[in-house]
Image (tube, rainbow, N blue to C red; front, side, top):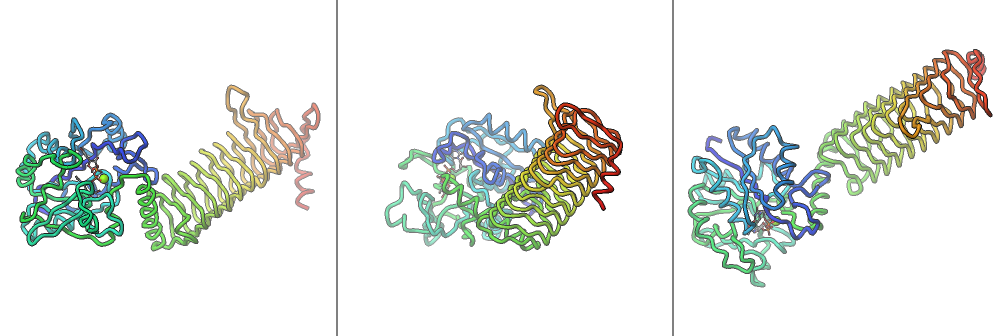
Length: 467
Ligand code: UD1
Ligand code: MG
């Protein structure tokens, strides 16, 4: 693309139909603000098609929150910010841009996007650009044919040109028209500037409508896109839910094309940020969020909820497990009903069983914590076996303390360690013990009642166990 262009996102509106008291562009759609999807589409278009394009945002309502968001998440992208003082309508928002953007006339075309159409893509932008540049038009609108056009501007075709009538101003006949305005346009800059000053607010909403640029007899056109639901704007929470499902389904289809097998698209929610490798199977009712990376050939059991996890290959999560911020090596088995909290780091072939909680702990390769335990702020050595009902007592009411347990230990059921405490390699803790002093390598610990005894006979016990 050789023409100089700018992309402008209108995001100053109040979003009153959402009724949730936050700026609509920042309302989360699958955990990311609606606006971010539009910004990403603009940045991708710039990267792929026209590197020196500028991206602008028109903001107004609750602008401090909008600026804070942009500075936090898009600090490296140089957006031009325009402020619309009063939200008088989409034409007024564009007017704010035209008067505030430096050297605006040096751009041949201006693309206008709505901050509430998150599934807009590079292909849509390319489609309207192709239409305006090859047919020598002055303005092109992206339209779709909607099964339910209620709430959207209806597009009327004329012998030459087209016009757009807003829902509030439409007659019952016009309301039957299913071809709708998506709020995505490209204009020749000079034409837009000439038209915008002539737009009045003589309509039911008393707003300045950008859609009034489109008039019968004018050199304007439209591109009607298939899969129209991708271009539907979000004005209500119901539309947010519908868009969330569409976005999710598109993502699941793309993952399944890469070899991830889903039992049920309808009950599985996977954020677009999640990376999954082939051969993995996902059971119904699973949610995976954040910066999660799932390796090859993993199994994610039903009703599991994962966030910011990193799995190597062949990890098996049994049903009803909740994992957040943890790193899991190959062939680890977790669950059912396990909870891994941030900082849990599991070595190869480790096993975490039912009703086990692990927080900020490293569990060595081959170690097993199979039933009903709490392990926090701990380091557990390779192949150590922890029995049922074990607790690292890590908190003294003021500070957290570390528990270290070495390799090849056997920790009997219903035991506790009072941190800080260190148990060496090859130790044996008898069931029901409370260990509050450190144990050297190869020692035996038993405390039932008031005394803790260490005997250097763990090897004998472990040997008996193996026999
Ligand atoms: C608009 C179109 C409608 C189209 C629909 C598609 C107009 C008049 N109507 O209606 O034909 O079918 O989008 O989704 O354009 N905004 C501002 N400043 C304002 C008003 C709005 O920046 O003063 C921004 C909003 O933040 C939003 C976008 O413009 O991102 C569209 O505004 P919205 O109120 O959602 O318009 P719709 O009623 O959806
Ligand atoms: Mg809208």
